[in-house]
Image 1 (tube, rainbow, N blue to C red):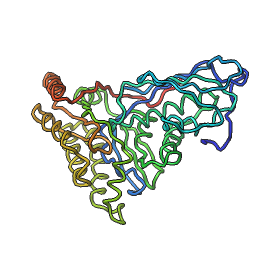
Image 2: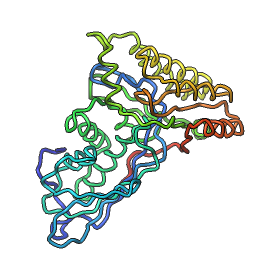
Image 3: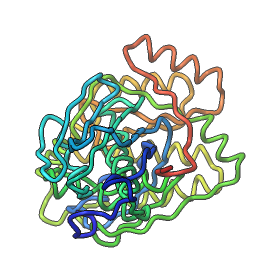
Image 4: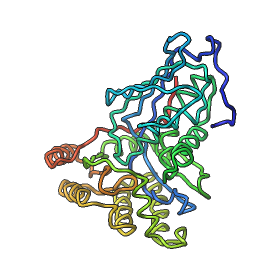
Length: 353
C-alpha cells in the first residue's frame, strides 16, 4: 500500500468518501531513450511527450446501503465485475485489481468505478500506466488523501513490478503523472528526476502539427518483449554501448526541440529506432518497417517505434510540416491496414476533480 496504512481517512459520509471524483491521465509517445529506464540498465535518460487521448476514471458512491462492493465497469468493452473491499483478489483484470489493492481502500467502502479510453490497449503508448495513474489518483482523492505526481507515478510503477511481477520501466508512469514534454534522468533505478521541457508556443504548435501516431493493429505485451531483450544482454547491461547511444539520443532530442530544430529531432528519432533494431531483432517488426517506408514517401523527417516495440504497438511520425501531405499519408496508411490515432499534446499530467 502507498502509505503503509490499512485505510485512508475518508470524508464523513457514513464511512464513504466524496460523492464523485473524476481523473484523467495522458498516454505518451516518442520515448527517446526508452529501455534505459529499466532495472537492468540501472541508469537512464528519457525524452517523451504526453498526449491525448486520455484514460478516464470516475469514482462515485454506489448507494448500495449496507452492501460493501467495488463495482467496476470497463466502458470500452461493455464489461462489469465486482470486488470486495479489504479482500482484493486478482482476476481477469489484474492491473485494475492490483491498482485498487495498492491504494488500500477502507473495508466499508461501497463505490462504482468507471474506466474509459480511446487509446487502444497494447499500443506501446503507456496506456496501462495511464490507467493505473488515473485510477490511483481518483481512488486516493475519493478516500480523502492527496498524493504528489511523483508519489502517484511511483505507486503506479509498483502495481506492475511489485504487485504483478512484470518487467516495467519508469518512464510511462512519470509521463502520465507529469504531462507535457519530459526529460527524465534516472540516476539509479527506480529513482528519477523529471524536468519539463518548456518551449515557446510556436514550437509547441508546430510540433503538434507535425506529429502523427499510427497503430499497426496488433496489441503486444511489453513485459514479454522486455524478457527477450534481457535474455540477449550480457552481465554488464548498464555499460552496453547501445544503451549509451539511447541515453545520448534522449539528451539530443531535448536540445533539438528546445532550439526548434525539427530536422534534428527527426534524425534523433530515426537513430533511436535504429538502435532498437540493433538491440534485438524482434523489436522492429516488418509491419513497422512498412509504416516507416510509407511515412518516408510522404516526407517524414523522423520515425520512432514507441515503447518496447515488437510485433505490435505503434509508431510516432514527425512530418515535414506540410499538413496536406500528412493527411494524404494517414489516408494511405489507413488503406494499408494501419490505424492512425488522433493525438494532441497534453500540457498537463494526471488531473483530479
